[in-house]
Image 1 (cartoon, rainbow, N blue to C red):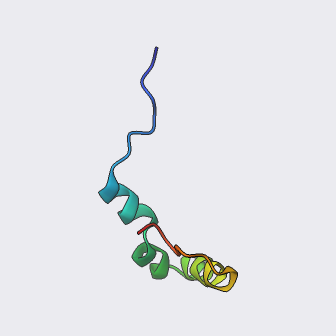
Image 2: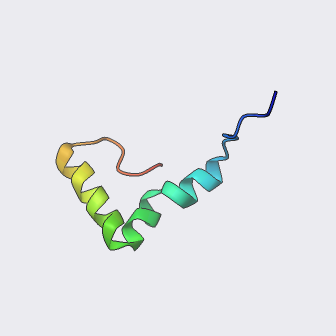
Length: 46
């Protein structure tokens, strides 16, 4: 049986999907804006 593909690492998760990473790109900013408007408690992975 092959090993599972998802081997979680906190640092990698934050660097790839974190709020700072989102704010770097225009598309990411739109994502954060949408989530803010929707009232999400977490805007990015924190």
